[in-house]
Length: 181
Image 1 (cartoon, helix red, strand yellow):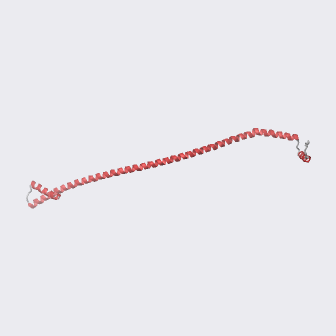
Image 2 (tube, helix red, strand yellow; image 1 turned 60 degrees about the vertical axis):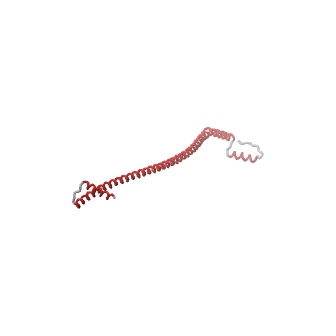
Image 3 (cartoon, helix red, strand yellow; image 1 turned 135 degrees about the vertical axis):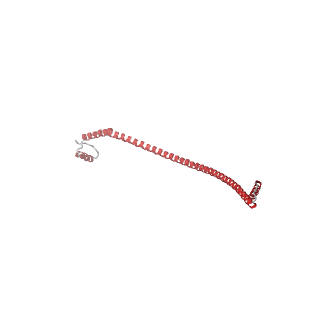
């Protein structure tokens, strides 16, 4: 079946119709192909395209939510890093303060121990002087006694006379006063 078309340029139209006829194009077949194509498009739209678009939209939402969560986590991480830095700074300051306190306490204890050691040393020196003085006095007394005995013994031998207790006491006193001087 040929299609009669009336146009101003009949030759162009005739060649188009001839070409359509050569390829086996007929209007009923063309219309049925168009209707089939429209039905297939509607079915694809309803059963394929919309579910795919819905899945893609859901996926897009999940990706957007993931990005928002990533930004939120990044912000929380930055906040945690800042808090960590603040805590470390505070801990370092506290540790430095404790070190300074320990140093000052050690210095105070050291000074106290030094003063205590000096006081103990002075006490030891005083006791040593006292002991030395007592030993000196004891030795001096022993020496006086020994010198007095020797003087009495020598005097007895030189004079050949036995000395009385009064004589011995007087000689001891004279000898002691001469030794002390």
